[in-house]
Length: 349
Ligand SMILES: Nc1ncnc2c1ncn2[C@@H]1O[C@H](COP(=O)(O)OP(=O)(O)OP(=O)(O)O)[C@@H](O)[C@H]1O
Ligand SMILES: [Mg+2]
Image (tube, rainbow, N blue to C red; front, side, top):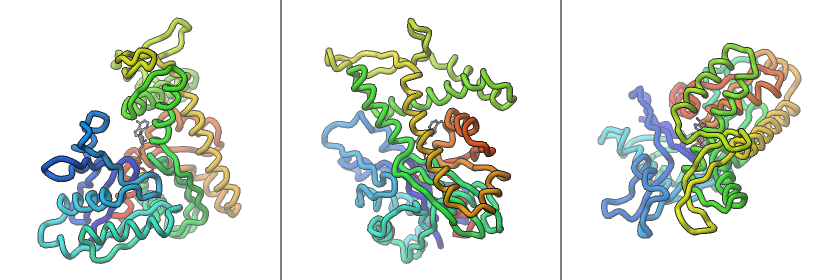
């Protein structure tokens, strides 16, 4: 029996061919409970709210193994959840790996899977799996460009005839945006917010920016997006406006001047600066990949467009920016976080 696995910086996914459902939980492990390590959803709820004796571990960051013990515990959790008892000592693992992962980190993945009971471990490049999961014709002699906007890694790959022709990657992603926002809010406003708050701020700004862009554009799709953003904004009482008429989003945290709990209205434009910087990095990576590609394949991409996967593909504002700045059709997979695992399973993992 084969277990297909994609462990990302933000979430882990696993599946077996005999089951249609896929396990999809946050990549977090909490230690220090008398009952043993807590993995996934239950550990995530504790982030930022745990007492000192509990340690929160994030196994992966980008392509790097940060916590080997936590990675083994994630594997054990997947096995206990997905495999019937009689298979728990007789299974192989197919693992997705980022293109830029070092041999040392790949070896750590291999050892962690074996420590959790796997007999053999096989690796598949995650961009290839993602492209298959997104339904691209990767085995045909046409170029497909896949862009994975992950939590800790951003990858661009051009695929043709079942192989990766060109790839470019950066060890940063959505989680990096959150951390940067947290730091910038602290520096600019002397105000401390948690990582989860920074992420909410980012998501809200993404939706809001897409709404504003939709107002300016005439396209039906953009108008729908604007409508959705307006609905979301109306449903969220924390969205407001400051004296200068700029939209703001109110967050809670600690005022560093007083040391006391407080709330702060952060202008959307402030958050947008971080989103714009990331969009620039993504566009730079796409450009570098295209520049290194044979012209025939560049022509294919111009005809067939670019497909976004990974959780960052839900950032409506990035989608808008790419569409505006790249003269190629850009679409996002509707279930972007699970493209890699669905691709591994579709390949008969
Ligand atoms: N609606 C949304 N708006 C903005 N960002 C979002 C949205 N949904 C998810 N994200 C972001 O997507 C990122 C997670 O993406 P994904 O699950 O693909 O990462 P991962 O596979 O765990 O990480 P990696 O592959 O980089 O190691 C997070 O940073 C999250 O904030
Ligand atoms: Mg990923």
